[in-house]
Length: 282
Image 1 (tube, helix red, strand yellow):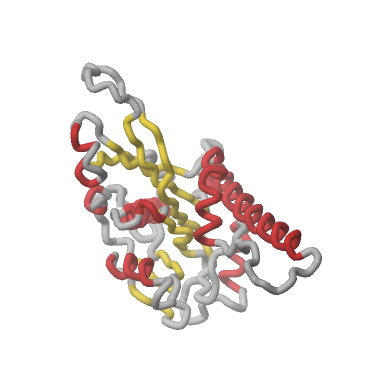
Image 2 (cartoon, rainbow, N blue to C red):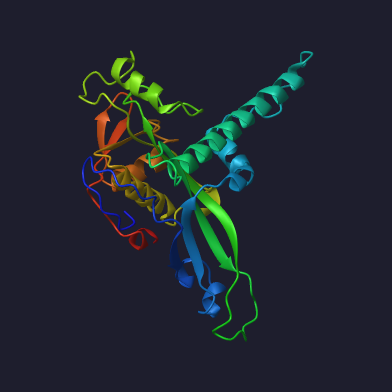
């Protein structure tokens, strides 16, 4: 993924080559854009930054969370019900906000010039860039300006090889992940892995942008990061429900992932398969 070479267990000290830009064919976006071939939309893969968090928070909370809607029941409300709902919704949003902020800080620390250690969290985002200059008479040398809209996110992190649980909402110190990997009661006893492994989570494409191959682009980008980190395998969990999990399962099956633990639907990805990002945008 991303053209990054890396062998099993081979850790490289460079950050991923982000931002990574792909020119999108106008015909794959909309007919209006096709009228002027000079106005090329771009798809950019980059790191999630601190200033992005408040913009994506509502979409992330709606998709991954369980915000409690106002009750439509005809039964009389008990005193304090509305206040309790607001507090619960607020606490959930705050949890997501803190968790994403911790991940950005951890990634920035890992790729700092004074810290050569590989970061154990890396959240990437997928950004659509559209030209904002509507003047058709612009000269070719004039620099084009673009508006940006985040349309997807995904995360790769080091996590204990636990087939029974997802990554926690908050970032744990790496030494704690190592201890859990070696001695935790929920560790994968059937595996020889006694250290944290690569773990894919928080893969999300905005509903209005699904069906365009963006999920495959995100997974290819995470594969490139995994190669840089020297991962020999990457794992994830997926919804086993036949209805709610069908889209995610279809994505991973089409990418050639294999099921490791059927009960927990834990999936192991062979990252030795490399592919061009451009080939995923269809």
